[in-house]
Every structure is written in structure tokens, then in C-alpha cells.
Amino acid sequence: MPERSEHVDLGRLRLTSGEGRTLEPVTGLGAFTFGADTYAVEPLSVPTVLDASRMTGGGLALRLRFSAALVGPCMRCLGPAAPSTTVDVREVNQPGGGDELDSPYVDDQDILDLPAWARDAYLLALPQQVLCRPDCAGLCPECGVDLNAEPDHAHERAPDPRWDALRELKLD
Image (cartoon, rainbow, N blue to C red; front, side, top):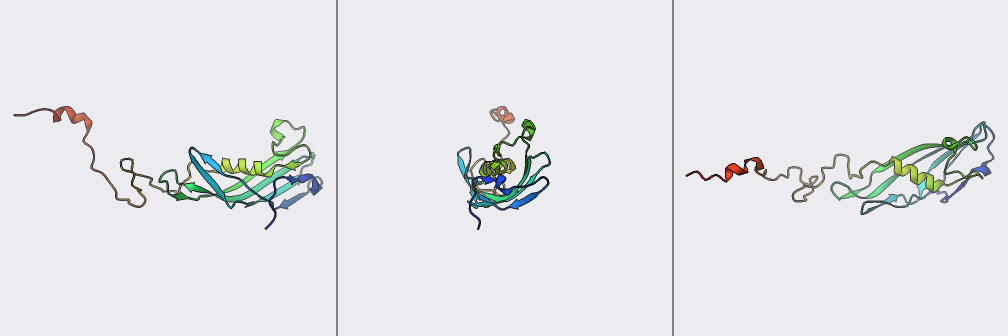
């Protein structure tokens, strides 16, 4: 397995205009906290595929791809969840090209901050809710029973409160 990379020196690739290379660095994403719950990322060292190419104006075009699972409690039923998320992002760094073409992950010496880019891209690719499965039924709002384990679980319906006044009538 390749060594874990915190920063990638793209200048050392000595790419000429129009030339590209594919690297396979390994990086860490760390843990994520949503509300009071902390979610780990597996694997701890995430293998990535990084494509770097030199543009004609001297800048860099970058593409990063990887997959990782977010491990923690399901947001509906609180059971174990580990959904896998695939990331495929692109970044351009063109010095002097303005804010739109200036990557915050590449410095003036063409050093790529791989963990920061991978973490931001992963966070943006995550689903809105971390679920144990897409059709998770969650917990019963009245008693807390796991509706995945007991799909036929039900409670007697409460009487309609609009009829409360009639229930108070005494008919003799």
C-alpha cells in the first residue's frame, strides 16, 4: 500500500504543457461530527486516484477520485450505519486567472493540500442523512420501537380531540 500523503508536490512532476500524470496517493479524512454524534471514515487511510495535467497557460487541471464509508449511528433508527460515498471532483489552478481559477488547495509552489481537498469534497458528497439503509423506517414516535425490526408495530389511535366536547355530555 502506498504511503499516506499529506501534501503532494505537483511541481516535482515537471509536467509540460498538455502533459498529465496519474498518481495514487493515500490520505486521511478524519472524523466528522453531526449534532452530538461522531462518525468515523473507513478506511482510515483512503486510497485515492489523482490526475494532474498542465494546462497551456501554465496552470494545473486536477481530478480526485475515491470512495469511503461513513461509520456511525443511523439518523433514523440509531442502529449501526456505514453508507459508502464515491467522490469524483475537479479543481483548476491558474495563477493570475482570478478567484474562479485560483484553487485554495494549491499554493504558489504547486503543493497540493490533499487532505483538505479530499475532506471538503467528501463532506459535500455526503447524503443529507446517514442511514443504515435507504428505506430505514426509523423509530416509533410514541414508544421508540425500531420499526425496521417490527414493521407491523402499531398503537391504538387516539380519539379525535375535536369530539372531546361531545364526550363530556351527560345524557340521562
